[in-house]
Image (tube, rainbow, N blue to C red; front, side, top):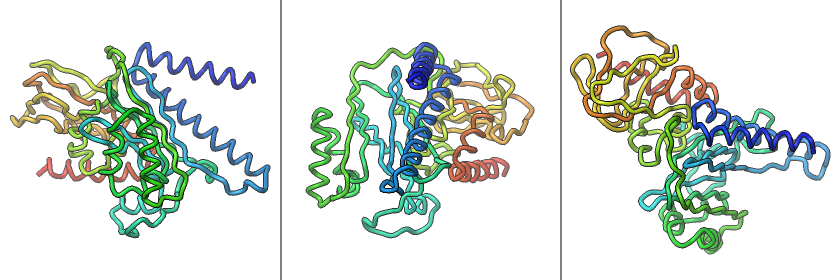
Length: 340
């Protein structure tokens, strides 16, 4: 009881700090809180299975969502999914931890049709648990849907899923998805949680990550092009949005660390006379900790930029080696093209 109380108090403190001052350091603490919750759940399941022979080999998928101010933080393990449903788009936020999905991500062929894909990562099956964390900006009217593969697998494509998720209240969505899955012949566990976002909390200065409307812009940048939405969000979990006005120089370093930028809005003039707009990548060499001297880029039209520190980029890559390989491949391609 004492341990539970201390853990609860620490969790409230971490969330409270972010709510009061949404800075990068406090955001990291939120991610660590969710990650530790997942790992503790994994330990509990494995310990219970070890003590009870009848439960040996049991496991589960797990998705957590934490709403703080105008952001939703996610932690994900397994092949259940989290979706952000908006009036004009439905985004799959999480990446399935399943063998066939991993094959597709690496460009290799996988079985066609609705062949069940073996899990590669789940609660209770491995001590070296991999936890994906990400966050998105949310607005009034947005819906967050968490569901098991027993819901989305039987449905005939994403269109059917999207159509159901955009109608009615959360209860209607849950009943509609489960009913459609059963009607399509689904026999696996079908569980759904749907959340409707009401009043949006006021945005304050400080930390600001990628807004939902910016995801397409960010995903078109040379560093992230052709990655899944879930991978884009994971890669940019350490990004911080900054605003610069006309005439400002874009700095190469912040807090003694080299930084790169993805342009969200506005126009930036490079020292060689070229101009870059939305989706443009600035100072990509900083992500390799390479120093470049000379004049700095200058803001031509008021700009919003997603700033990525070298240390934070390294942290993301260390956490997910598959994503790291994809990012470094794109980074090398971009730098090679820029050097021609």
